[in-house]
Image 1: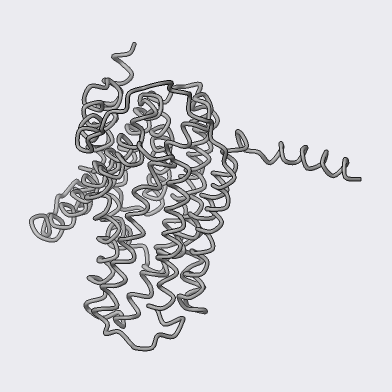
Image 2: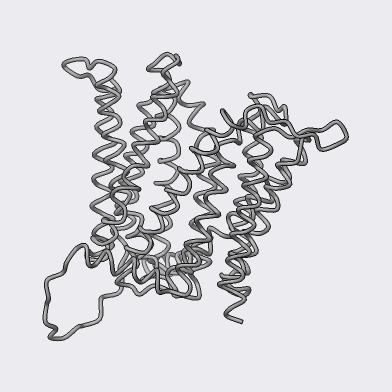
Length: 441
């Protein structure tokens, strides 16, 4: 009987395995953790808005959450990359998961789910909230590069595109499902359940990562240990990017890509409800359809990514995405715009999936943390700059813009900025093709 059980376990264990045993545990941990994060992030925004009774200061308070998340990526990420390259990757991920669980768990007291012996004034409560969110974001600056470096250790090069597609597809599914569940359950049960679920998801991730058995590092023999200089190591990573024929063009193309997407994401609500005249109550379902395009994109690139080539996929995806956004900018028909968003999301996920394998292919193991962290900081700067410029220009200099295009149709500031975003992304794709594909041929 025991032998039969072991045989069935081995058979179904192989069928449920994704790529290999180690990656299966990594994927299982990240999947539940991503769903927990998306639910928690959505509920946190709703809770802060309710704290201020959705008054005039609510948008400012909610934006503080975004700032608390973004600042560590700007200020800490490059330095975290140096430490990630020094430390054991699996151990770093375990420590960061445990710290994030403790930080999120402390919100049970701050939110009033667990009683406190004294009450905090609202400004202090918000300040403590921002510190906790910022602390969790700091942990993510160590966890994410470690996860990428660990993936490079446990997944063979020919399987990395598929592994990236599985991870990205899970992320898209989480961002599609999480907010919908969160808003409904928050109205019924409040914030406590979301905090508990996020803490449990970090615990689940910790348990799954604990099961990963990365390959042992090769013996180095008797090597003279020299003192390592932190800023010299940081500069070595940046110098490697500058000298790389793949990483520097990829980083510059990524900058244009994310700058354009920053414009698109910032103005999406105003385009859909204002220019396309979609009721605000239908904005969520309207965005869910393009999200399904992202899931389709990850599945497609997982099927043929390794055959076509990552650089070709990246360049073509950027050009198609830019063309789709350019098409959206000219539209007043919501159905045609929806088709454009769907195509753009399919293309965006093609580019997102192949970026990780391209970085791992071009980067030595000892530099993965620094390269990944430097890219994260750069695209965050580009996204934030695009967010500021698009919001500022649409509200001030381009506010009264009206361009007649014939047939009684006209373009306003939102249309013009979407068209600019599409052109920028298309140029990023053309640049990537010229530098990464054409020169190699």
